[in-house]
Image (cartoon, rainbow, N blue to C red; front, top):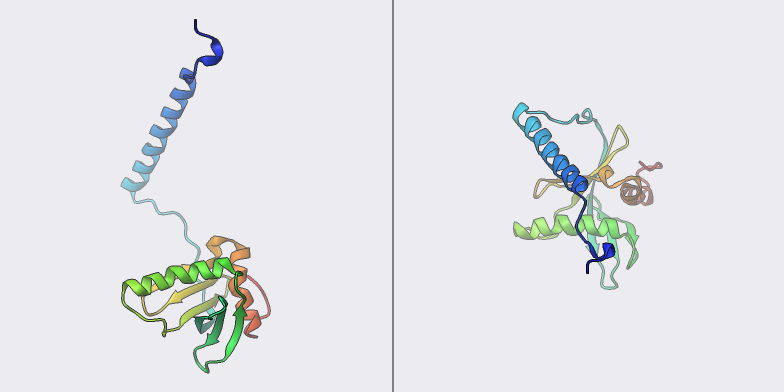
Amino acid sequence: MNKSGDDRTLPRGVLLGAGFLVIGSLCLVSVARLTGYQPARPAPSVAVASYDLRFVDRPDGGVAVYTSADNRMVDLLPPGTNGFVRGVLRGLVRGRKAESIDATPPFRLTRWADGRLSLDDPSTGRHVDLEVFGLTNAGAFADILIASGQTKDKP
C-alpha cells in the first residue's frame, strides 16, 4: 500500500522549470561569450595616496604594521582580531611563497580618489580591490590608515 506522504518524487512542473532555468542560463552565457560582452567597469580613478606597509607576525599572535619608509610601527592588530585583514594577507603571502619570495618586501595600500581602497603586492603583481568585500571589511584597512595618521575618513 502506497501512502501519499511516502511519495518523494518532485512534481513534473518543478523539474521542467528547473530545466528551463538551466538551459536559459546557459544560452545567455553563450550569447555573452560569443558576442564579447563585458560588464561595465568603474571608471579609472586616481590614486590619492599610497603607503608601503609591512605586516609582521608577533609571537603573541598579534600583527604589527610598520611603514616601509621609516620602519615606524603605525598599528598593532591584537591577537584574534581583524580576521579580514589577516585573511587577505594570508592569501597574498601564499602567492609569495609559491614564487619563493620572503616576507621582507612591503605591501602597498592605496586610497583612490573615489574612496576605494586596494592592497597590492608589488613583488608578485597581485592586486586586491578591498571594496568588493563590503565597506565594513574595507574599513578594517581604513582603520590602519587612520591609526597611522594618514587619513581621517573611512571608505
